[in-house]
Amino acid sequence: MLKIAIQKSGRLHEGSLKLLKECGIDISNGNNQLRVRSSNFEAEIFFLRDDDIPEYVQDRVADAGIVGENIVYETQKKVTVVEKLGFAKCRLSLAVPRYEQYKDITDLQGKRIATSYPNILEKFLKEKGVQAAIHTISGSVEIAPRIGLADAICDLVSSGSTLFLNELREVQTILHSEAVLITHPQLNEEKLAVLESLLFRIRAVNKAKDNKYVLLNAPNHCLPQIIKLLPGMRSPTVVPLAEPGWSSVHSVISENDFWKVIEQLKANGAEGILILPIEKMIL
Ligand code: PRT
Ligand code: ZN
Image 1: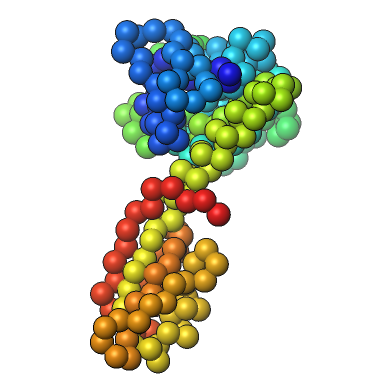
Image 2 (image 1 turned 90 degrees about the vertical axis):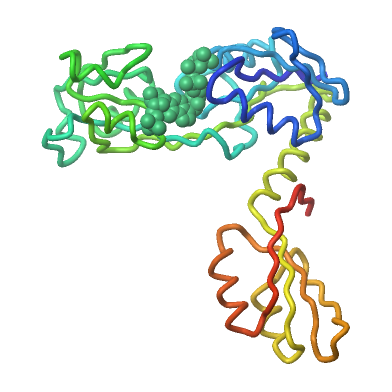
């Protein structure tokens, strides 16, 4: 049995539950319970505050957990990051009042910086050789400059609208973060086997999200060029159409290359292009 800790409520909660569901792991937390056994997978899910998850994993209360990398690096517990999960993306950044001069990090020498991430910030400033007074506060960091508590802040940013509304300007990114799967560094054989199975499913789900299934028709003389543009998993499937001299080509393309490849396919004679989402992808 693998004990997996996820956030009870907050920005990671939905994404964590959705990922487990996409992995076919059934969890029904109808009564708002603290822990729930999956009915179809060797796992028990614990619902906790995100800040506490690394410590619980270190202390073996849970074997694994889903948290933001920002929390992993700030709490400095002995846990292993085993997989990036691709959701809850954000960055930990320094910001100063909108009209404040800022050339580079040395402008923060001797200044006061408010943050909920004192450990990450201290390490960063040390690396840059900058000395500043770190004020640790647990929430609403963005108001610190306005109330005269600090000259700058170090906080999580995603869209940037919180900074904008508080008349702050992002000047330096310290860390890019996303949700990750962490585990205790030493799991027994039985737990490792469940973890392997979980990782296999997570990778199949996330790989599918990065790719699209493409179907198209093309005259046979265009096939060599089209096949070059669509390497697919091994190579594309090519099947003849009922109309002589034409074929249908099926393949997989990466989300990142998508628009570029589609334009090139059209330019090389492809017609009737269909793009479909992939649910799971196993290489
Ligand atoms: O109650 P609990 O302790 O479990 O939750 P929490 O309130 O501490 O955390 P929560 O739910 O706010 O965030 C959980 C995790 O989500 C964080 O640790 C990050 O890994 C991730 N995450 C992703 C974010 C953001 N994006 C984010 N934008 N966490 C916080 N924010 C906040 C940020 O602090 C700032 O106040 O959102 C504001 C900025 O957002 P924008 O869009 O205006 O830039
Ligand atoms: Zn928290």
